[in-house]
Length: 375
Image (cartoon, rainbow, N blue to C red):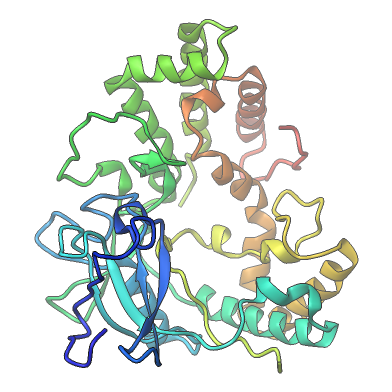
């Protein structure tokens, strides 16, 4: 950026190498911002993933919102969690840059994932203790509906609006499901916001069933490609049946190791407490369904998980968090599956899984089914 550039203006030299800076193909890329003499401004520009053309950070209901910006600003306003200051943003992909972007502070330090294996146990415990405190602060925030957080330029309020989640992406893994379909200017009603947990949980399934109704030939083609040995029509009927059963499962009664900043709130979601009351996946035992491959060996995870829980236990919020964590495990297992498309639901194993839980819910109301890793 030149000395006379405005912070709300982002431009690039179109004379560079063809593959050096192509905004049309970016997937949430972050660039350092340098002065013309090469000196750092200690700021970055983040270019958002184009997964939601036009409505990714905008709503078509008379208010113009910004999602990642609103989430970051709310966390800064109502918690002590370190988040970068945002200087400027543009949520209109038709701008001269050709993509949505924000300009924000460059968080100092090193991403934990880059050097985690080289850190001492004491440093890791320090990091985990801070993460636990930040989890508690976010857990203490309360909202009247579920969805994604937006900021209206007409008022200083934070508003809950349509959810941003992969189930509603026009393209997944770079593949557009209906390449020639026009991009609607209307927000999908299945994206909320949601006033009940039932609406929140069933939204992905309802959206996929509507997609099947509107694009049956596309779905049949997808199923045929997934498994040419089986009749696509039969698999589609099975998938629809299992998904409608799954909707029934969604019916519920109402150096120092200092963490210098949390970033990447692009698809943050306001969700029920039992979905928010979690232990970080990289601290869970490697064999736990809620774990991830990051985090190191089980012995180390056990030590760090104990540190995390020790911090949580010292909070007045702990009893509420612990109950939501323990009681929410079967529900979190369900939500992990709700984003599946019909080609995944078109399985006898999934139908058995859903049927077992429907039967349990009917015969043991209000009691969670003991979970086993059946899929």
